[in-house]
Length: 329
Length: 309
Image (cartoon, rainbow over all chains, first blue to last red):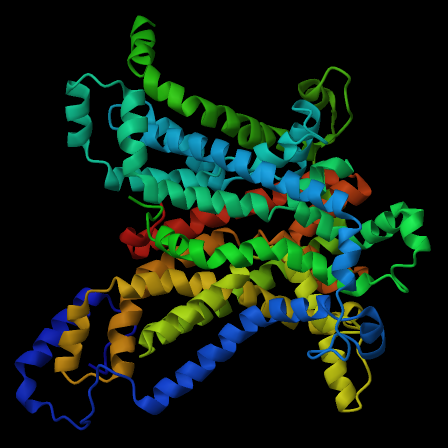
């Protein structure tokens, strides 16, 4: 057993275990404890180690929330404290005074996320379903057409030129939607999913009943494949919500800046918005000092909150989605 | 000819289904691939549109590449891209598999679920937000790390100007964001392992460690191989946000944070040098393509089942 290399395949191992079973009388048990479970001490150590890792992963978010509720004066004097000397809601008041731009960016993000996800799911499932059908004569060619884009990319600069010069999408909402709709990887995953989960016999009986391929797709395939489709939809939703790169490339118009991108330019934006603040508000001297640092962190909180809140609900689907289909058949 | 038309008619439903996707692939993937010829041209916008611009631009042969490789930058960005990715692949694999095994072995399953939720969280955060997370620690005036140093009377460090710390910060952040996803993928595979292997091993008196070494790891091997090939195929590509947002585009850090992707981006957006940045992009695509083909070929020789295609 000890001679077995780590890299040997499971088949070899199971057969050698079988041999050991045959000569089982020679094996002397040295340990009495149940080998199914970890030793309690080992388990405790693992719990602590993983606990540290888990804490490291969420701590920054908690820290940012704390900073967003710290008074600017306290930050200037003591830095970003874990337990601030002085708490304050100024940052959120301040953001409220700029609600127009915030709501606009929120609106842009929500719009591209919803519209983008719908287009994306339809295009990907149509494509993947067609290339998964044995009746489709050109399926090999179109599978390759999608697969090849995973191997060789057009590159950033030619893509930029195509989107801006050929399609003329610069500073339009479509520049935030279309470049992200398709993804060869998702097509291949969905194709595998359809191959595995859709049995030809159901389709045959539907065809005998005279259902058209479109009806079959929407009334049988779609409900049947909901777990896979939900996964693609989730990936796509997250992709759109978190996207800032396409905005960085294609969007200059402040009316079309999505949330992530607003956050990215927040330093410039705070300056810009401060200049646009109502003189009246300034005269009321609502803020002795502009809560710049805490306002940044409050923006981070506002942008992250929807994900943090919905995360525990969609996490389950995300994890089950990871196993729906490998790249290979 | 009649046969083809008949075929098209017979397949009309399927062809309609792939039509939107095919148009997208042609516009957003294949047209840019054709646009890669700009790497051999001096780009000049033609009033007659995109195709005219590409076709009428003057051929300059390998000039753009010569220019690119005559600078020190080509070496720096290639080195950074390759070394970071190699570290990510090795460290990422070890961390993900180790975390997955530890998660699967925890006796308290509910605790394991809570941990999974926390560890996966950074995966859903964009690098824009990630960069603010990092900023709370590294800010020179207010950051947590400089506060720590202050307690021990150590001088503040200007983190965003000191390149020597950044290789560690970059690797740490890559792990921070990636280990959750990786470990969940492996954990899903561990959960799927047939329990009878473990039962057989236990009957033979295999300790937990031996079970991990001789059952779990070999069972994970195909997945480890396939994910590693895919990563090696992408070894010339980097996560743009990690190298652009997290260092806050700080020029003092370029020597250790500039990778091919950020170089191409800056060449295009800051310098407007289309020829040279297209050349750098084509260099990336072409080498990446060759690498996928080679790694897949090697894997197919060794273990056909694990090959990607």
